[in-house]
Every structure is written in structure tokens, then in C-alpha cells.
Length: 357
Ligand SMILES: [Zn+2]
Image (tube, rainbow, N blue to C red):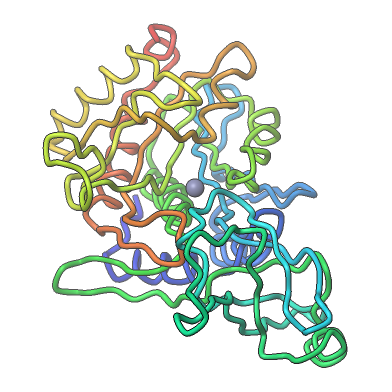
């Protein structure tokens, strides 16, 4: 069992959160995981940059538990370069239009360097930008011509763009601030769950899946599930928190209330027998949890649960305030609770318990 201290978890999350990984451009995230854990585990990679992480003692004849975490983040892609040196762009993943402008971003140029830019906003002196559509927005790298963008900044059409946000952690409140918590927290959970199970004799094989392109339609998970062929999947998500704008009785994604067990969203209905078992484990082990019935949203559980002979899925969320913006808050307590709940549930799994689902 390798249980990370809070400091070790912070170091991992910091590296993952600061890594730039627009959908389709997850290399930096994937490389951190390969470099840090390539010795500990056997890591396979496909051409999309999906990772399959096998434990060294993978038996190959036991039921398979897939731990999924998507590696991409909501981002943008450069669509065209205008004569005045500004860049038109498209969203990669779901953004609320009004949260997009007036933030710093980083654009990857053709030499692999990241160029700072600002998503332009119209000043109040010129009437402000209320009601501005996403397709009318531009990224400004401080250039004054097309030639400058291309020749000096080496920015090309198709370049990925991510928020320019640096991770920080408040040791007193144990709250993290950063970008891409959806879903680098999930990637961290996959790694830390695998580590926590190291050396334990289990009745199942546990395989980590770092899946690309979730934000544009769960594309990586569709490939990973076919390769890993799981009997059960646990999907870790940086789920949207609602505790700062919903009534207390309605809020289902609250910071510091523990692992969020998802019952329902637009992409799947959780297996009620599995949910009961997981809640029983949480109560027995005194792991804090909260339950969510989401009116919107979806996760990799959407495609995964419909694969093979139907894969029962558990979606564990670490609530993230202001998900799908340039910044978010999340609590260390919820992150640790999600890992602990997954570990304790996996310990109960065997061919017999899985057959009852
Ligand atoms: Zn998301």
C-alpha cells in the first residue's frame, strides 16, 4: 500500500493541473504520468495518447476493474489569423460565453513554445461586450499584423489554447485553486488508487485508464474500454460544485462533504445495486460521501456502461467550483475521500460480488 501524504498529493495535482492538455493535445499530461509512474506500473499508450496502466502483478484471469480519468481540459483551438494580428478561435468543450473573455491564455506555437495571449474584451469606453458571441471573440497576443503572428510568434491555424493559470494550495483551509481540475483531479485519483492497492492480494485485476478527449464527446474512453474490457469501471471526475449558488438543501456538489456518488446524469443511470454496495462500504469505513442526481452533464461512464456486455459504472466526483472556466476551487478532503472509497470498494470485489450486480 502506497498512501500519499497530503504534500505528495499536492505535488502530483500541481503538476497535473499546470500541465497543458487541450482535447486532442494531452501529451504533456500523459508524459508526466509516464515519467513519474513508468517504473511502478506497465504503461501502454495508443496513437490517441490514451494510457492503459497495468499493475506488475496483473493476473490476466481475474475480473477487470477499470479506473478511468480523462486527461483533457476545456480549451480552445485557433481557427484563423486575421490581418490585424488577432486570432479567431473555436471552443474545445463546453464554455459559458460570458466567462471566456478578459482572461489570459497560452497558445502553443509550431516550435512547441507557449505564447501568452489575452482573450479580447471590448472596453466600457466603447460600450462593453455584453451579449458578445463566442464566434466574434478573438485572442490577442499583442501583435499588430498577420505577418507578426506567423513569422514572429510562429502561431499556426490549429494551435491549441489553454487557460494561463498556476496552481496554488491553501494549507490552512486545504483548498486548491487552479485550472483543469476537471479532470486532472480524476487522473490523480486513478494513480493514487492504483498506488494504494499496491502489494494487496485482490480477487480482481485493476487497470488504470487515462482517457483523452472527454470534453468533446468521451472519445478516448470509447477506445480504452474496448482495449481493457472491464467487468466494472470506476470513473473519477472533477464534477461541477454547486454549493455557492444553490440552496443548501439542493446543493449536491459541496466542497468538503466528501466523495460525490453520481446516480444520474444525461449520459447514464447508475446501477442501483452497485450504488447500494458502495454506500454500504462508505458507511462502514466512515468515508464521507454525497449523492448527486444531475439534470445535465455526462461522463465517460456514458459510453463505457454501454460497451461489451454492459459495464456497471461507479462515477466518483471531486466537486470543483466554477468548472469549465479558467479557474476552480476543490478540497483535498473530497479528493482523498474519493480515493479511499474506490480502494475500499475494490477490496470487496470478486467474481461473485460482481455477478450480483
Ligand atoms: Zn468537463
